[in-house]
Image (cartoon, rainbow, N blue to C red; front, top):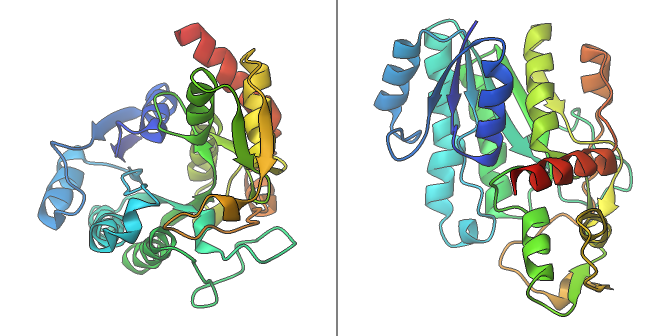
Length: 285
């Protein structure tokens, strides 16, 4: 199988290249040479790659800046998603699009399933709205799609929450981290493997994939510091104490039952995945 990865230099893209490259022929594209908002270039790139599968990992991911740059976020996350899906359909290829827990409003006590559909979804932020529109564009342009919603992603080389906490712990005497934002940490290694597993089923649709269980940002920070051998004190606080431009879902736990039913796989617990990440991180350093 020939696989085209768009957004290959991001923390997820690099993991996808490693995982798919071990079994398939892989072509990688990213900025500055490749721009997903350029429809003509997207079609030319997909056609030239002779791809059987197009993985769209290109995205505008700065949640805060999206509030002041909504048009740019929209071009990348929504229009760009449509370009990739349509270009894949034009050559008979399947397409993968990554979405987010930010498409939910975070008011449900129960885990969110894939059954909640547009227009009942109510994103709280510009970023969440653009990703939801990207889902819609992907479905419209290519029926052979895998839309994978994930959350709290962290991986090698990424500007993610885990790395920010580890960096802050080395320069500050103590940390304060919100305890009233609940979600599902996800290791890019696991998401890349899950992507391959889903594509091998040839059962298109919308799926959730996150590591097992859920926790608060405070819980995740404490676990990361403990596993990294850092003793910086961490104190819980409320999200209201740190106002942000973008509103975030307070509790967005994603159910992975559909993923497990289709693939026969169960996501490993988030703490086990974090142990793996910290071990890999220490090997790199």
